[in-house]
Length: 368
Image (tube, rainbow, N blue to C red; front, top):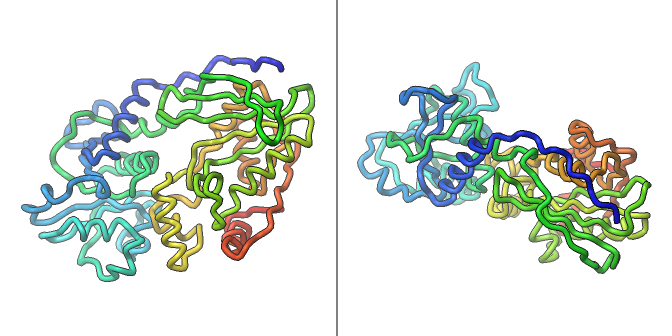
């Protein structure tokens, strides 16, 4: 099998990535973070935040005359607050103020849409002018990367480390990706297979590529598959991920050779816990698109530049892509990968995922 080329990596900012990694770790642990729009900002231009989901809120709320909260734009839309933000950028978070005393349970009910039916009455609160828009926007992205709800208590005490708005992008920089391991891995679809492990120098996320068959000069059949624990491992009937994965491997075995890129982007990039929250919202009657938006995230937060970088490191410039999602084609081509052909993946619906598949077709543009 031909050895993949190793082109010179891009030049990510390792210091910014390390700052972002510390910030993401802090959010998962419930610790405060401080974010400035740019380096050299004065202390008055720094946003000090505490994650609503993971922090011990009670000690910060007991003596507060009022509470300032930062929430995502889509969550503000659900709470009917957007009409109070005249001329505001709809992509920016929303800052709201609540008169004290406020309990931790009340803040969590504001942040978590899964609780809306249990706690339908919220407020009173009002929108405030967003004083640090770029820092606030970066906080929302860091929350997504940390897999926590995008909601923050604005506090006055600074965190130990200072982050900058640019750090969130540095953490996800695909240029930091390198091949860290390679081995033979016979699999059920084809005993002639090799696995490559990719590790990012910026974050702690590992991705893998499984090369099926004997590599030659023909164009490989490639599948970009985002991790789905519930579908790939547990056999969930709510989605089509598991069947798509196994169908793709079978199609590669039938071709001269193929590559499965297994990307650690659970729940379209919102993380496992938030995906399970989206499932709970689907149980309440929302489709997969509305569920993600009610949680405060994009419809699809995945970044296909990581897949493009993996193909670059494997020295694969042109592919035949197994997908029903035209956005994957656009995403790869925007990163310099040539898609010679899009090959649809037809999966039979079942009573549990029929509505989900219809939603992907009607609202996110999936095609057969």
